[in-house]
Image 1 (spheres, rainbow, N blue to C red):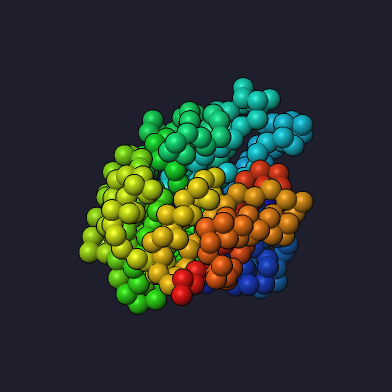
Image 2 (image 1 turned 45 degrees about the vertical axis):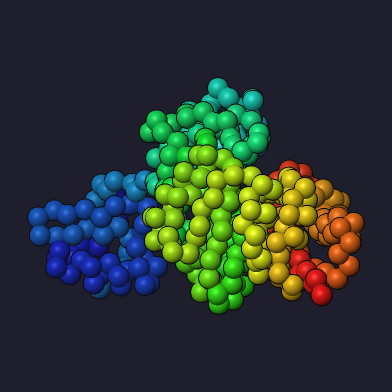
Length: 344
């Protein structure tokens, strides 16, 4: 039995707010109505109120995270090896499940959906992102049988298929950072555009002139065109299917700003970017770098890109920004480097 304040229903909301403000309401239990009266659970007897006992239902506590949801279901050793962090893209959660927990994958997936009510599909990543198009090999383990979703980021919508294109929500801060640097009427080249997150966020959050968005993955190109329409930026973002090394020379244009979000192979395309950048233009370059710590990884990435540029006989350049974006494996980081190129 639970101590309750008994009040008439029309007084219920006023009294509930009062009890909350005084930290007297027992939120572990659900209030109940009998006839014209509301019974509000309280922590102890309160003067000046009618206090009675009632058999109330205990409130179901929402787990705060996946580990909390799986307490009592997985043992301590299993909870220790459980991957606590994961990506949610649109309404799809993407998990990495250790081999020792593979027999519990459906249980883990259901826990994700319990904690995150917006998640309608749970997939597991079978192996790391790989291949020419940087895509994931995934298995659906819970929810709807689909891998297509719509992701929202900074008031933009991105339709995509997580099994056919590369997309990470972990670059959202980097995308808006670059968009806020863009000056009026700039010409932008997005050399590895994917489904368009950099290009479209720039188009929606700046007064950019034109953005040329290139990708060689036909699936990414399809979704890039869809997302350009979805976000109503057809007059700004120009989608192009092809390899940047082949496409950029054919454009025969010079750009104020070039985005190189291909951290594994961006260094192989620096010559293309430098040939297309304007004097005093900025290249937003991404790289993977291993080091003793973040600072060491950043310094190694700066040194590597600097040496590559010098070999191209470009002596006048400066690193105007360098930061780790995310850790991709132990002591390996995704590094963002902004390079200003002076050609005269």
